[in-house]
Amino acid sequence: MRVLAIANQKGGVGKTTTAINLGTALAATGKNVLIFDTDPQANASTGIDIRAGADAVTSYDVLVGAQPLAAAIVSTKVPNLFLVPAHVNLSGVEMELMGAQGAQFRLREALAAFRAASETRFDYLLIDCPPSLNVLTVNALTAADGVLVPLQAEYFALEGLAQLNATINAVKQNLNPALEIQGVVLTMYDKRTTLSDQVAQEVRTHFPDKVYETVIPRNVRISEAPSHGLPAIIYDQNAAGSKAYIKLAKELIERERGVAAA
Image (cartoon, rainbow, N blue to C red; front, side, top):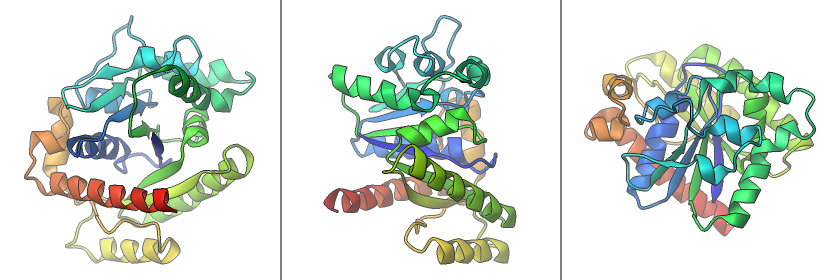
């Protein structure tokens, strides 16, 4: 199971949209995919029509050690796509874990226990991170093999990428030596503007081997899909954004094959 954290401390860059639609596209290729929602807003959960009730086992329970990971996994409408839903309780998890021994390793430990005890096997675990560098994001980075960074094609996004890269390096040095940037995907790309092209060129200059060729365009169908509780790929498979995520999944699989071969 490859564990990829989908992270960027800047909000509104397409993290959750990428988690949902990339996960759906990977599932469509026959991969078994699990999305782990660590955002207290639970948008990855509601975006695929899962709303955790008061009695549900959620990512909160897994992170505080109250329940094993296997108990929190639910199926979705999408074949081969599963979810560990989030709950608003996550908003207080930082306070609960503050000072607790090994707080940064809760998710890694839960994954290790799951791998050892469960017969269920997933090809990919995608961790949808909140838009901040808090204990939830650090848990995701500590547990992950790689980080997939959605980056909005605008100037200020470059500053955020520099900050995230510094955090990834700090986690790699202190908590997870195997952590790498798996890839950077440009989102909300508007080919009509020179700014999108300039940002793309700048990012490719700084991360020449990391930026995906596939870009995710600005697309109204992507924005509409969550209100219907559906990934955009299912809501409108022919939309430009849906086609882009399908292409991104193919490119990711090819990149992962290269990692495995190495």
